[in-house]
Amino acid sequence: MKKLFALLLILVLSFSLVACGGSSDGGEQPAPSGGGDAAPAPAEKKIRVAAVPQYPPEEWAQTVLNGIRAACKYYGYECDDFDCNGETDLQNNILQDCIVQGYDVIILQTCDGTSQGAIVKEAMDAGIVVVDFDCLVMQADGTSNATASVKNNDYNGGEVALQLLVDAVGEDATILYVQENPGVGSGLYRNNGFRAAAEKYPNLKFLTSRPSESGRAAYQAWVQDWILSDPEIKGVFCYFGDASIGAYYGCQEADRGDIKIVGYDATQEQVDIMNKDGKDCNLIASVALFPGVMGGVCVEAAHEVLTNGYKKGTADEIVWMENGLLTPENSATFVDTIWSEPVTDWSNYG
Image (cartoon, rainbow, N blue to C red; front, side, top):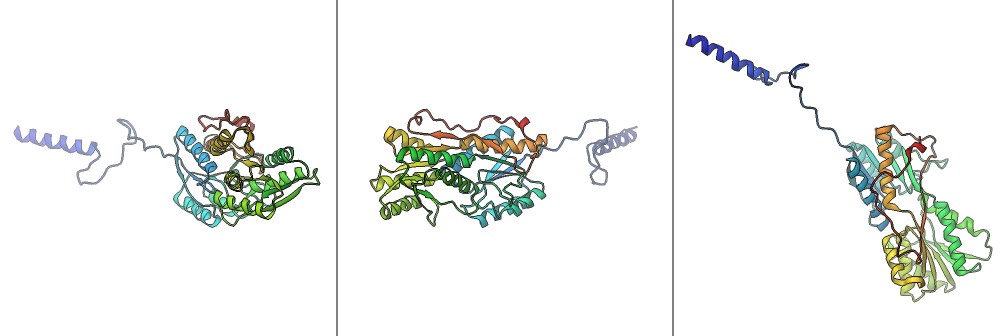
């Protein structure tokens, strides 16, 4: 009887080990195909987003990144951002690494949209959603081959800037403006709008160039060099934020607060300058792009692709952001918010 009880106990223990996933020979057993407790489901893979702006040190780019981070947190996505220092080759290397590492989404502000179509197509062929913003991937026909595109009306921003300067300095003044970088679509379109609006003022004189280096210090020296070479300059147009701030400080240092500046991006530092100087501020306006919202809308676009199958209706379909205008008159109440919830009606797209 004792022997029979011991044998039964051994059999029960052996059965228990097999039922719990072991085996009598130490090998693993397959999970049961039905009945009993189901095997735990694998953890859901988190969507990984790579944010690759042109030049992250700029205040404008940091605000875009804050919007991207906020929206990624909202949707439960992981977010990494990368610094290419405004260099096309480095940005391409980063994009290649993102492809190899298997990111799900790339949010891209191109350094040279005219040459980066191939790397964007490679990413998309690898199954990555590419959302370009502000400076888009420009195909030969002017369209972008990215999965989704988000930007402001740059041409109109340039038109508005020219008219503001004419109203401030007159129709026969000398105006300096920042020459656009080759391949940077936003600068090209802003300056094209600026130049087109100037055609109805034949007595205006225009000067243009750009420094060899990036950053506001370079633009501060740039505007001072021009003021020394041509004291008749009455107005300056800068199509992006750091150039606008550099030009402002350059004019202040040269004691030329009479020169009127129309800038771009309406960053917080520009708001602070206008609040400090008041109605006499020579930074008379800055075209506002609301980058904190733009970054979030880029993530919204990716989310629509991933969850609702959004596709561009046409190659040139763009999710347009509305321009604003910062001036000394509204700087005390001007608000550039960070994205906090979906803002775009996606039924209008795709």
